[in-house]
Image (cartoon, rainbow, N blue to C red; front, side, top):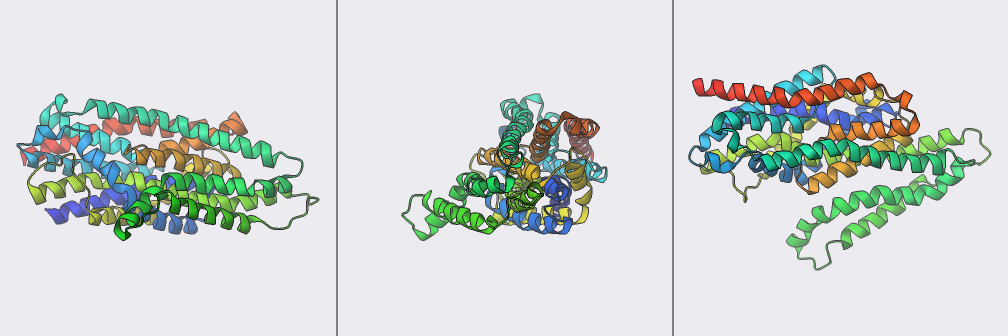
Length: 407
């Protein structure tokens, strides 16, 4: 049974990687800051790292927060079979959506599927509706927050650098601040958590923020040094040269997004498996002290990277090329906004949608550039896919659970 469940979890993780991970890298490919091959390598490394370091929090929320575990105390095997159905239902829907190039939300799929079998198995009262409500509110707010952040970042760069009479001179003056923005946001959210285990294991007495601040300072100086170079203010194509230099920052922000996505969305792939393994090993349902084993995080990370490499191209094209035209400057802002939004959610244990955040960020850029630059038909298709994901996952999971009871 365990072997079959592991294969199903890999199938779900691979389809999540093909869909969600692909759209997290789409802006970098669309703006030509990274080639498709480079994007796959960057995403592969950092998605895996983010999944292993931070993937447990969201997995634990999904495993214990969507349905009331107390409803299955007497029959933990019912919860086990339900999670098997959740894995199959979500994997199939993500594969269908990816084949159509639609960046659907794995968060929608997993939450809808868990609720679907929960209603059939234990009734409507088994669902933790306050948690569902919190998650749904985060889904609505995610694209809005990301759009506002992206529009703010891009407006600042557009007015302060690109539209200045001497773009290159302005860019050189802005390099330290751009470096601080990238490293500061990333460091303030991620580094304190990732360095805390090192402090515990090695007995460091330094305050937990000291190492992140030191790394941030070193990284900021390095970024500034790399981007400083001589360029004549009299050169006619200063703006294009600035865009080329900003592509370097977009590569950094692409790494930021990949790490953020791995830290959040791997939970969608491995939460059912973690629940199943816990029940098989202990004979009990997960409780508030439930933690995801490291090997499951490693499995989820490997699965999403595999799916990205095999099937990721179609969704990358949708996000990077079919919403609005992107340059490195705008792609950088969209990615920075996406990563900021998703990492904040990860630190709170909320399974938000990276596709929501990224699409919201790209739309925020389009609103600053020109409303006519946004391809609204693509947006409508994406939103429709978002909306139908929940009922499809709900019904599919409920049907699979019903069938499993008849076998």
